Every structure is written in structure tokens, then in C-alpha cells.
Length: 116
Image 1: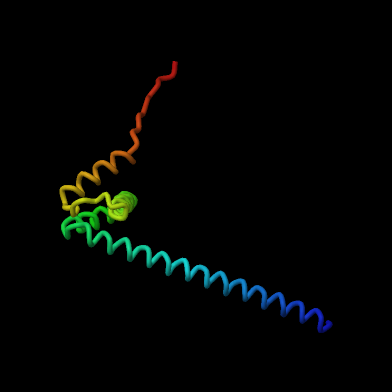
Image 2: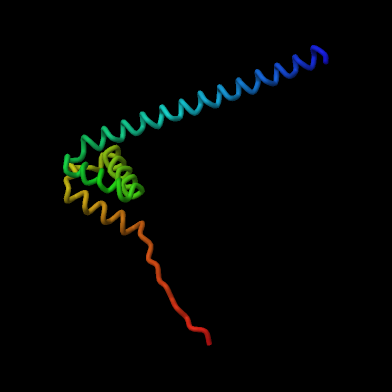
């Protein structure tokens, strides 16, 4: 075996380790950005919602996480665009939940046809 073979193998190993390190760093950066985004979102929700409304939204998140996320995003977008005039109380949150849930709900019809 020649030294060139070992050098090439060593270079390939170094290249793979560097790629793995860069992938881990990119993933860590993405996770940090996601955590920061979530923290900002929760801060906005704390400012624009009453404690009762936040508690209800937390309960909804346990049962229907996709609905809760949609409502959170909706409320944050309203707040960031300046369209939110009042603090969201429990009754207002109930109405928002109803509207967003009814938009996303699909109606299923089952038809039973008999063979002829």
C-alpha cells in the first residue's frame, strides 16, 4: 500500500467530518432561530391576550395543536400589522377559534349505493 492511498483516504475522512460538522452547525443555528421566533411569538401573545384567553389557547393546543398554531399565527399577524385594537379576552378568543376551526373543517359525505 502506498502513502498516496492513505493520504487520499485521510483526506476523504477529513472531508466527511467537516461536512458533518457543518451540517450540525447549520442545524443548531436553525434550532436557535426557531426558539427565538417562538419566544417572540409567545411574548406578543402575552401582551395582547388576557390570562384566561392564554389558558384556553393552551388547553386547545393539547387537543388540537394545528388549530392552536393557526390561531396563534393569526393573532400575532394582527398584532404585528397594527390591526389589533383591543386585548383579546376569552370571549373574543372563542369567536376566533370558532371561525378558524370552521374554515379548516371539511365536510364529509358518505354515500351508500346498492349493487344492481
